[in-house]
Length: 352
Image (cartoon, rainbow, N blue to C red; front, side, top):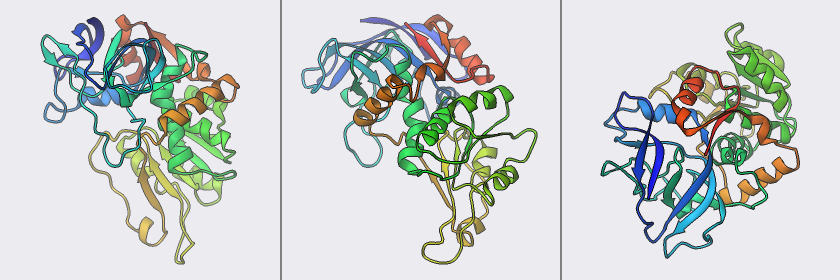
């Protein structure tokens, strides 16, 4: 089977739309005809990864909605014609790193690098990355549940376990940050503080539940968060992953101290790190009992996807509001440029 796909053929080049070959599925693989896919900032990180870390040609995209086209003979729980979300988080219970085989799609005879790809008319992936959803859910905006929503929402719901009246600060108002923001609002956190460097994004964040906003180009976010929360937030999330924000979230949370239950606030890194090292003051851990943790796709796909989509249907978490920009596959390079330059207010998607 042939498919047009957005891939990176060589290190240092941007995304290109090329024809790829998709073989018949192996015993546990699924071929999906895609209707939509999200444009995620982590894909820009992957394209800048060194050849030593990431081989080319590189498959791209990891959140998509489509219909099952063909199944391997041992695939369970799916049938041809099912509506599904393709994601990067395994739906079956596992411990440690996700262990699924790479995609078997090829470009000019060379297998694509990566386990999943959705910037393509068709994709072939392991069954563990394909989640069935109801036909009633939309073909277009449902795709962002496969990454943006599960990543941001899951960090707040599962990793941090935010409770009503907990104070929350979120750095970065892209698709992941806005999803985290909306989840905090649904959980009745207060205050909910949005931090960004673009005023239009901060204004947009108010629609998702931000009670306070901070433009970190104009004022010190750490100091401002401390003022708003009377000493620091219970939770601070970094949905960006640059050195500055990775270093800011720990001092943004409240202090604890000595005693078994005198725990300080929790800093949670959601964004893919753009650098390998940051500077943190160990006094934050030792004297102030603070915590710094990561959150990587903290979700239960088969349970949580249904919940997010039901919330969309019930007008609690309207995915149409989060999707602000739409592209065709032919415009995928433009979508990447728009994302890199901050032109996409919420989440961009590609429709097929």
